[in-house]
Length: 376
Image (cartoon, rainbow, N blue to C red; front, side, top):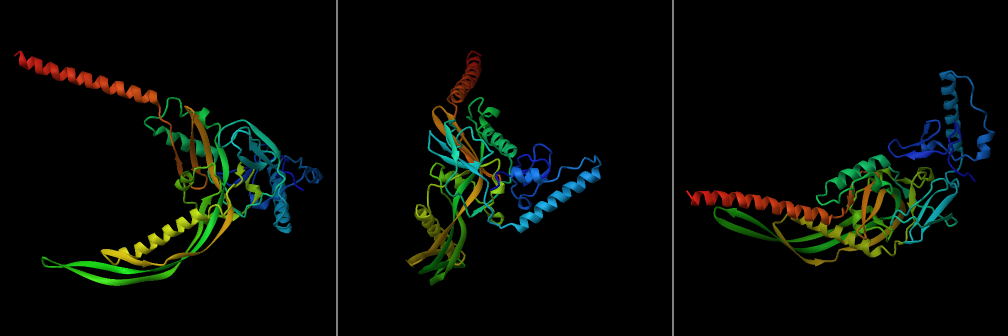
């Protein structure tokens, strides 16, 4: 079994650059399309011919092109279900979170609570999501977004917007269940239209019936109880045109959370979103035809739901302030951000005294004018 993703040129471990969507080598600077590479064992790497010693640029370029061509040919020849390299699962002793990554990506703190109490072990259970969306925003982009977002807070504590507070930011593939929902609209009632003839108001009443089918695909619900559902909904939507079959070659350098909620656990939430969608579609169809309407009979229903397991990219930062956890999240595909900034009581007190001082100066100034006028 392959144990990591090696650079075809020098044998170093490759990591994914989210900005370029390339696997990059920190040693020789080469970059590769993840889809064109297979994992290479150490034995396979050593069995390859040595790099050319000819220093000419043409020879080096020819050799690199040959190596990439060989890798592409091997990728096409091998079965698409090639076993993934060894993966490691980290379990947080503080909050119980479980995150998975490749064996060469170290975890030194928990993405959910910031605790360093992590225990790593070889992953022995199956970890095979059906789909994923690769990261499009790098850590550097996420840090810039965090500084911009946190800096807008009027009551943000002093020193909060600093490099130190982003050291624990993690690129996390969050587990989502993508629901495909089929529904039927079946409703009837009365609607009124108002028109005017001169000064007279004329109200016309009509009966209406609405019947039809509705289909929603990829309705995302996160399968992790430790992540605030409202935060995940706040960074929607994801562009599901970029959804691909799960490919472990996009995992190096990032973490993947394991779901702890099944589709059955999320069925009530999925049904609620489906019913909300029915209600919105029904009312939108009536608003364009009537000034007022009353739904007298509504037999609309959810007909079926199915869910697919997918990993979606999220930059995640947990930080503690005055014994309370706050969270910042950024959609790793679109750059949308959400979270809650802590409030500094020191800033509030300072603001109070500043306002009090300004009012005192204004009052003294007004009283001075009044007294001068009084004494002539």
